[in-house]
Picture 1 (tube, rainbow, N blue to C red):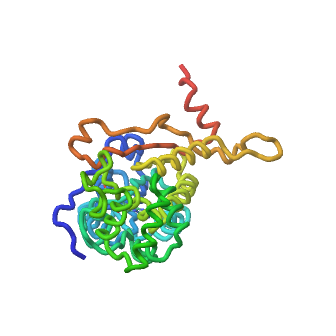
Picture 2 (tube, protein in one colour; picture 1 turned 45 degrees about the vertical axis):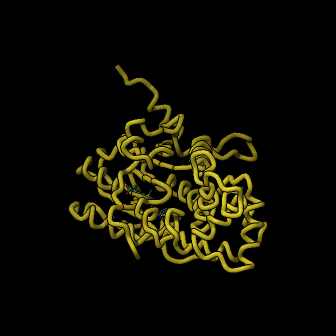
Picture 3 (tube, rainbow, N blue to C red; picture 1 turned 90 degrees about the horizontal axis):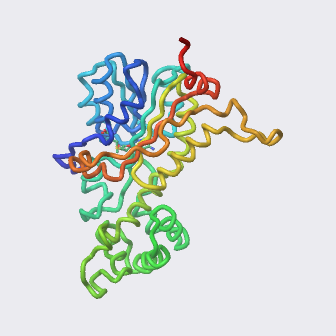
Length: 334
Ligand SMILES: C[S@@+](CC[C@H](N)C(=O)[O-])C[C@H]1O[C@@H](n2cnc3c(N)ncnc32)[C@H](O)[C@@H]1O
């Protein structure tokens, strides 16, 4: 595939992620989205007593991460797979009793994915509508040309928060009746026309405020192609249950749909499931303590150095029962 030469990746919120993961305690850490290995490298460098299992669904990313982490020898192991399969991947790599001291997920796309024209994630390049992060599954092109109008409307609305979802879906269905929509460029033109910004519209700037008018629909398709929200929900629940005592779960997200899932799942796992008989939370289901009251955002300095950090939000939790939370709060004996 036509890879960019300059797919340098600066990890987002890396100091903050390490502060919550606390790898200086040693043990096994899982980077569930190892990508180009930026966070993984920082963790292994900061903590000689820590080992890392890096997972990614994208084989191209794993090849890059492998080269970057080779100098750590057996302290870094990499596995291809989806993070919703964490229990199986962890058991295969480390045995069924393995309990990580920390799990990190840095969601979304890597710069390698965004900047590789042939992968179809970005409308900056005219390319086939693919958008798959890893092998298998339907491409964005197949979805755009196959889904009924009502499903396209729902996806554009729910996953893209696109205000003109119904009109865009209708235009997509109209356009594909003439000829299949096969490229990022053609899809963008269809969206621009709906918004009166394309060649058939009154012209003028092809932007809605600061973002390209195609951004929301592209985000929606990418989420649908990769089943991103379902992946995240399953992963968070499983990762929390796998953690060792005081194990840390750190998640960096880049849009409000993901951040809401992280916030609500952490809250539910901290509060516990309500027992239908007693109406009170069942103690054994209260397994997390949330460490970040509000999401941690990148500093102005970081955003200036790395504009892709702009929308990043980090949330962290620790594996702790209610009794352990009480103990942690009690002042030390004199
Ligand atoms: C923002 S990048 C991670 C960058 C990485 N932290 C670094 O410093 O280089 C996100 C990565 O997560 C991967 N990814 C997204 N969803 C995934 C999933 N469900 N399972 C496994 N990997 C996933 C993507 O393929 C991508 O490589």
